[in-house]
Length: 330
Image 1 (cartoon, rainbow, N blue to C red):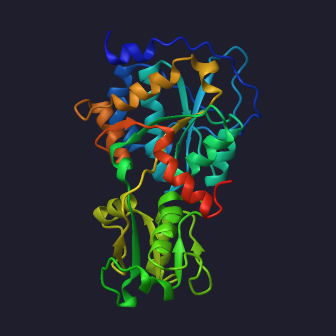
Image 2: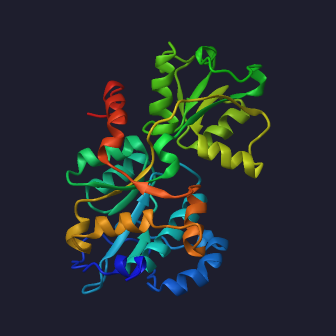
Image 3: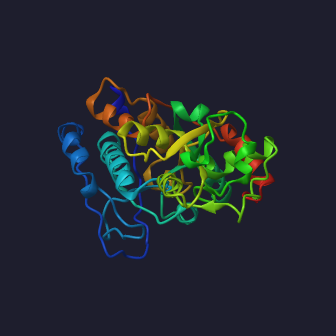
């Protein structure tokens, strides 16, 4: 039995959940591996029309339960649609399940909807993953990218500050400064920790720190001069720089040490709905993605990853400890 057949072998044993209907009904995906491979290029080219469904859409009586995946909105919605719409297609084909991507409005909503069971599988950052796991006992980390074992943030400044790249974070203290989302691991939690370690009050910036809401927004606010400096996810910074979409007014100032970050988290309601082995099947799917397979390579490329590796709750012990010290985890 090959890996794909093994992943499909779990017995779903699902019951449709009763949730509030949405204005938009999710489209169904045919779980054919061949169809996914044939359609990957088209799916990538038509990202804005990719598979998604607002949270709360009810399944018709007697219909097969739908696995709803979500993600913290850390980038532009169009980017997230392309990324997670493609993941939904690939997961559906590999696991013989109906899978849909449900966009959310903010980080807190992702945690809340995971807690209530409206999202089954969510791509969280380190901090939101800890928050969600503590609020949903029985939640299981599934997988993280190879780059998430040692992730980094970058501090950026507007070139008008005259600051040259440095490992010394203290000059940032006198600048108007913005984080990303208030509960972002790479855009707030870990940068605040490293600022504190360098002797900079993470809340003591002139006028208080800003919160842009996303990594892309941080770049834009520093470029406009609204803030003189900010911090964001290194992967987003590298990707936007490679695309040539970063305003030349924004330059990298410093890079943080590494820490664990993004990961997939499975809700405790999922095994009863999709089979007791669903966590193992999902981990097998993600860790089995290969750059040699066209469909798999499309997923890995969108995630900016060489591979996925298993994730454990203990990987995020440092995140939890720092979150508690900063009052972001209770």
